[in-house]
Length: 232
Image 1: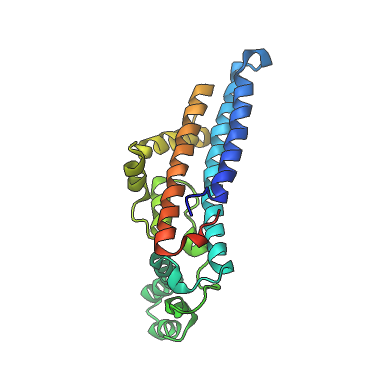
Image 2 (image 1 turned 45 degrees about the horizontal axis):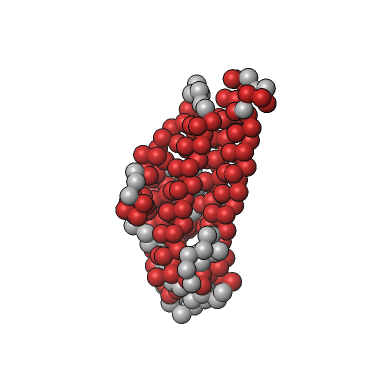
C-alpha cells in the first residue's frame, strides 16, 4: 500500500483552497474591494488557515485512534511512546498532589499494579479506552513548533521538524514561524499589511509542510504498527 493522504490532510487542503479563492477574489480590482477591505480578507484568511492547521492535528489524532480501535488493534500494535504518554499523563496529577500534600497512602492506592492506570502495559489486550485524545493531543492543539514536536514525539517521531527538513530539504521551521508571527500580530498586535501574494506564499508553505508531516507519519505508522491503521 503506497501513501494515501489522510482524511485530515484532504480536509485541510479543501479549506485552504476555499480561503485562497476568497482572497484572490478580493485582490482583483474589478471586484471593487478597497485596500482596507482587502487587508481584512487577507488577515482573516491567515487567521483561519491557522485554525485549519489546528483542526488537521485534532482530526488526524482522532482518526488515528479510531482506526486503531475500530480495527481491533492490540496494545502492542500502538506506538510505544503513545502508551508511555498515557502512563505519564494519567499519573502526573497524582504525583503533583503527593509532592504538595505528602499523602503517600493515597498515591500508593492509585499506583496499585492492578489499577486501570497500568492496563496500557498489557501487550495482548485490545485497545479500548486506555489511550484517548488527551494522551495524544491534549492541550497541544495550537500549532507552535514546540507543540507540534510534542504531539508527533508521542507517536514515536523524535523530531518531526528535523525529519521534514531532511525529507524536503527546506527550512520549514522558519516558514512556519513566519506564518505564526503574522497570525500572532493579527491576533494581538497591529496587523501588518498583506497582499494576495503574501497569503498565497504562506498557504503554499503550510500545505507543503503538512504534506511532509502526513508522509512522515504514514511511513512511521506503517513501520511500527501496520499500514492498515493509517486513517485515509
